[in-house]
Amino acid sequence: MTARDISLPAFLVGYPPLTPVTDAAPVADFDIGYHPPLIAKPIPASGAWREGDDPGERQFLDVGPMDLELGGRLPAVRLAFETWGELNDAGTNAVLLCHALTGDSHATSAEGTDGWWNDVVGPGKAIDTNRWFVVCPNVLGGCQGSTGPSSNAPDGQPWGSRFPEVTIRDMCAAEYRLAEQLGVRRWALVAGASFGGNRVMEWAASYPQMTGAIAVLVAGPATTAEQIAYQKTQNQAILFDPAFRGGDYYSLPDGAGPHRGLGLARELAHITYRCPTEFDQRFGRTPQEGEDPLAGGRYAVASYLDYHAYKLAVRFDANSYLRISQAMITHDIGRGRGGTAAVIAQLTMPALVVSVDSDRLFYPRDVEALATALPGSGPVRHVHSEYGHDGFLIENDQVTKILRGFLDDPSIFPDAATPHPCHDRG
Image (cartoon, rainbow, N blue to C red; front, side, top):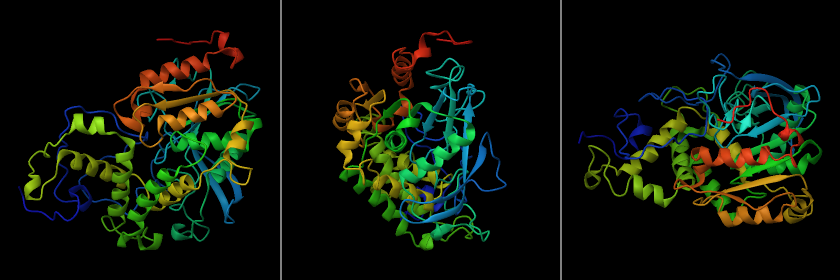
């Protein structure tokens, strides 16, 4: 094996070039729609989308200044978002999609060939864009076009460490303004999974008059102690990276930013997104190709984690990761409202609640308890998967069947019984 610095994972050091990941069962494992090219080096100080970059299919709207829940203030807020389908004259056929922790607005593409949920959203698909006007914004505090730490502050420099703490309530408040500007009078459905599902719960609690129905996939009404522990550990990985520099690293050259800390945070997170069955079946104790674990090399599963660390480092921003993770840590729809259970009992809109049976981040028992407590929910719907929490991104056939059954129920959506032009059930 070629001599190299083995003190850090190869992908994060940037040398040697990327090596193959030993994997007998390749599986789609993305949570974004936009995929930057993977290069061996260098890694940018921030993988954020910046002014002047290709916007792709993003649209942008300024939603004005915002006073934040915890006392901060943003003098101007812009949201990046994407839409599919057409809004009806009444402004009532709209569906809001809430992306996962490190996701973006690109749930699908105009051609339907890429995106983090392109098998689920589109003409004739479960969320049928011949019928629904679908909106997916990049979250406030994110790094893919919406106002966040990598955006320019009024002085023309990136906010960096100066960017205030935001909560999920702030994120939903910004999206509420977006809905108003788009002419959406009421969301027919607010849907999301994982961190996105947490936002769905907050939408229902904060704006019940605007939320016709909800679809909550592998998420909950408040963060559990275990989830807080996971997120805290990931955040520490970034904060302890000397290159983080307190959050002011945007002027650093390629290869000098906090990619080691951000990559380690992703490795820790990815373990919670998958499950032992997958790791054992895909990797076992197989050494990485061309490496000897007894001589400083890696096992295949370690290479796999390094690969995901690298992928996040080239497309995401460390400050955004911290802000969004902290928003997840503080998530509780019952905060200041009499408690979580009391708020859940008031959420009477129709609800679809979905679990993944191998999930070890949002345990099925907790998701089942949410379905039982929500007045408008039927029994929890289960997705069977050997891929853990990320099953909501992988098991698209099952997710499609569940969502379609909900959206085609005329007792919930009265227009479901009406044939829709070009409605392809294929």
